[in-house]
Image (tube, rainbow, N blue to C red; front, side):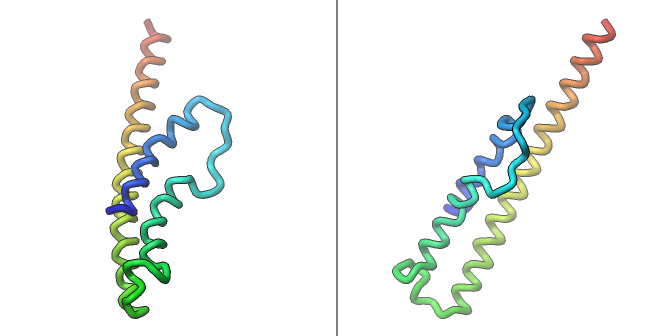
Length: 100
C-alpha cells in the first residue's frame, strides 16, 4: 500500500501539459521514485525483508510490484477518462460558440 500512495500524483500530469508548450516527459516522474522507496528500504540490508531468502524476497517484490502496477493502471484509466471528458466538453463549447 505504501508503494501505491505516491502514484496518485499521476492525476496531476495532464494539467502540467494542458495548453502549454512543454515537451512531454522523457524520464520517470518524481512519484515513481517515491513509489519504489518503501520497497527499496525493506530490501536493504537492515530492512524488514532482509531475513528472507532470495526466493522469498523475489516473491514479495513480485506481489508488491503487481499491486502497484494494478493501482497505477486504475489511476491512469481515471486520468484518461477525465481527459476525454474535458476534450468532449471543450469540443462542445467550441461548437456552441461557433454556431450560435
